[in-house]
Image 1 (cartoon, one colour):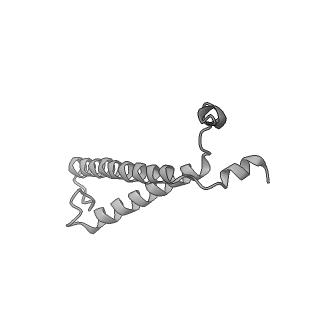
Image 2 (cartoon, helix red, strand yellow):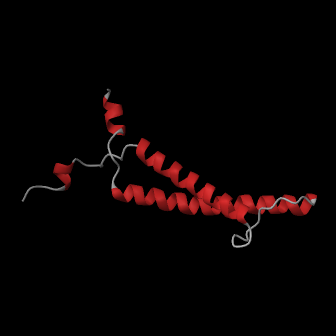
Image 3 (tube, one colour):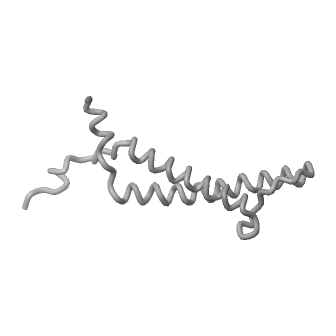
Amino acid sequence: MTEEEGQRSERPGLTRVLAAILLGFFGGFFLFLIVALVIGAVNNALGMQIPIDLLLAENIYSLVMLVLIEVLCIGGALWLVWRTPPTEPEFPTELANPPT
């Protein structure tokens, strides 16, 4: 096992995981809005009957699409956190925290 693989297997910090979950949640929500609006525009322009809209309480297809996009975005953000090593501090820790 190489040193690079050893760094990848380290568990990320709690703040990085929470940031990835929040990023995935908000990114997935906005991605859902964009997809639903594009599908709605296609429906109106071409007169198609695609059952995707922004009414989550009345349309199970929209809810399933929202949950699927949310899970994929959160999973993707968590995957990136696990694959990317944390950044190195600008200064060595001995200089940042001098002994007293």
